[in-house]
Amino acid sequence: MKKKFFAFMLSLSLLMSTAFAAPAWQLPAQGKIFTDEAKQIYIGNTMGRLLREQFKINFAVPSGWTYEKFTVDGVNVERLANPKLKKSSRVVLQLHGGGYVGELSDWYRDFAIKQAVIVDAREIFMVDYRVAPEHIYPAALEDTVTAYKELLHRGIDSQNIIVFGDSAGGNLALAFAIHLKENNLPQPAMLILLSPWTTAENNLPSRSKNADRDLVLGKTNPVMYPAVCNPVYAGKIPLNDPRLSPIYADLTGLPPTLMQIGGYELFVDDGIELFKKATADELNVTLSVYAGMPHDFSVLLPELDDSVKSFVEIKNFVNLYMQR
Image (cartoon, rainbow, N blue to C red; front, side):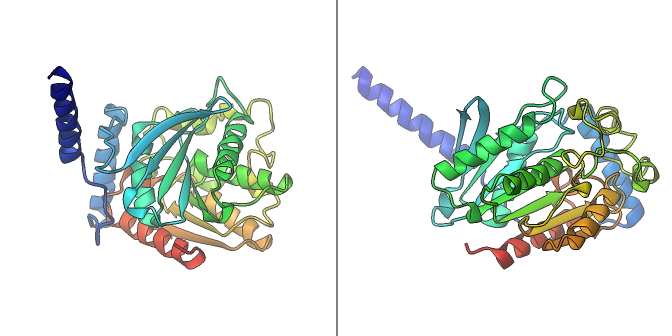
């Protein structure tokens, strides 16, 4: 009798957890639209709140999705899978931002769901790579390579892998792709770079010009702005070293790349300079600048119409170069 009661309660618990689980995010037809001045006020107020709340979010695995954590040779990796897309061949590898000092957080777990939905991926792997100051270059790169090799070991074709990298994760994605090329390892299908940090130097004009206008990464951010001005992940490596500043690297042979940057962000010139170098190296690269937007706008402000437009652009880019 006790066993039957326990089984009943377990079944009821699973049923209730399924019934009350949040539905998966869906790409909206349109986001919030503001005039330019009102948009900056909204961004400033939203970022002020997020900073006060330390970017806390109640992450919930959507109904029917699976979520797991595992370790590969000491590297922490997390996986989300969408049961509705079991037949899809697409897989996302997420390299989160955070100036190489911020760890994988619930904010990025939640954004991972959006990434998977946008590109119709059956699963997404998030690399919880080691961060500075305890772990300097090449710790994050080593962890990413380890995670990628695990995906290949699982039988996932490299040409089915979409690498997303935002901010420092964008820097890491480029360093990762360059490492693959230099070591004769298969490239992923493409790179999606959101507000990528493409040079550890601080001499590009937008670093000073947009220091006040970038309401995400600029002077109003007491943690991340100093992290950009003093990139501790570099260790003793010169800041213009191609391993840290891919605008100086050989980009030939890298996969198709989409870059999205905000017109008001600290890294707008990072994106422009990388685009120039990539074009000179004959890389298939697309750069989109979203006027008036701050750093990582689609990650932190997904409700804005600019972000929705950026999601549609990502979806179209992926569909152009990949089979489902």
